[in-house]
Length: 347
Image: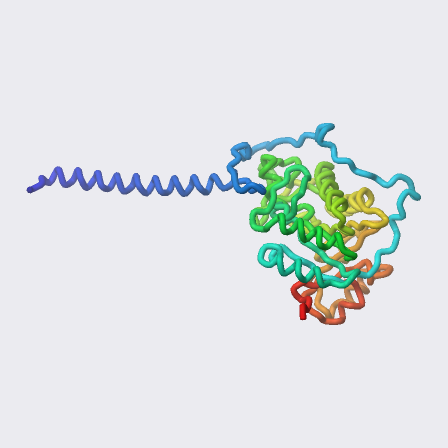
């Protein structure tokens, strides 16, 4: 059956249009999936879409003070004799359990914990930089981890707090993601981009809390006190800094804000048997608060240990400075030290 030239041209145009339409449909479907990602919320029950997480460019949404029913009970030391905030800390020597081990070998971590002698320090990472809680937290605006077995972490916490071990919880202070997704990217609580009205985001797609905001402090106090009530002896705040960029809106003095907020957290949360400490990159520039607190340092080589201690010039440095390391080099052992729990010999 012969086909006229005009019919062939029509069929070719129809095929070309159909092909373009199909490509556009595939592209639209891909963009739809990418767009939906920002509305995915992971909870203990699984993943779900929450279209209330609407992105609001422009002025953003102002934070509202918590209602009376949502007020977090903060217990402040009253008077100089109420609690001895300067009671000396003891030197610690122990091991840390990071998120990778919680995800890949939590059973092995629990087995090792059961072999540790009395008095050993054990540190557990309980919140990711993206804001996912790795234990069954009951604080406000919680997003539980979808990568880690939270119930097993709860059992690990019971393991370490029920024995005569020194227990330490570590979590990021000002770096988060899911908190801001759940709160419509609230620019009053977070650090916003200059002249843009929306939140600044770092290379890992994380947002940052404003350390000068009272609601930021309340949020941290709520978490710290929950961990204290779970039986931990110390909470260590990592990511305790303001991002080193001039692209954010921050009108306060940065160094003074970091100092003031650190002192507030120690004053309101630390007791004579509970410490609030800080994991920092540079101890020489960190304003050490008064009270039951210490600093944790990472990436300090063994040959630099004594030089760093001399620069810090702390009274009782063996108990106020904790080195995070992944070697058995004995030059750390004069001071407090934490090593990966995988380095524990099980033989």
